[in-house]
Image 1: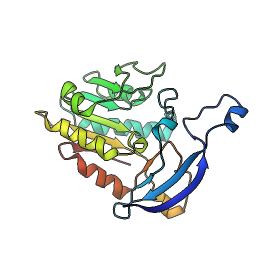
Image 2: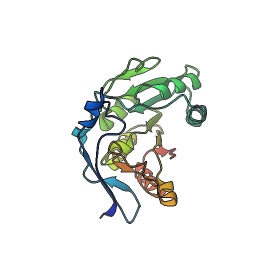
Image 3: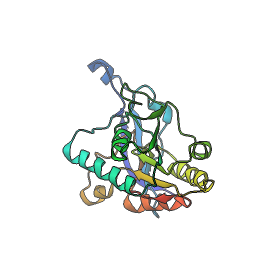
Length: 231
């Protein structure tokens, strides 16, 4: 069940549309920003989203990683994860992008971990310092194949039309392991949308928007995974 939440009209891509000129920018396709909300868990999503409108393979999602506050957050996130790991862990990141977080994880683990990243798009820095697979992660097969001690999903689930399907598949895969498997998930939080009325959060590339409540509802589906999630 969904109720109307925000109609942003027809707008071009915001973060993955990279026009080479002013004329290309003016000619960009306008896409529907038709956001609805679940009245139970408060999750918000664009019900008119189409994956084929977003060039994920050609234009990988950029992350700003050089800010002092953000670097501190990355370091703290790595520390939280590494503290929970056994000796010689296997760590997997789904949607690793350029690999900044995995390189930080490798450093934080002191070279003691096997580090794997999965992403269908590539960048010159992708794969430097860790084992890279240029493809989508297949939860039902890959969790069993690589037997990770932790799975990291940072700034990925907001791009999914059905994030619950991924979480449940990961949980099923983890149930086949003979050891604990942690899930570390991170996503933007829209709680302040309700407090301030800001609209900058809503752009086409992010089809799913999580409140604290809807994020916790999603993580509750992890079941066989130990969830260490934060917004």
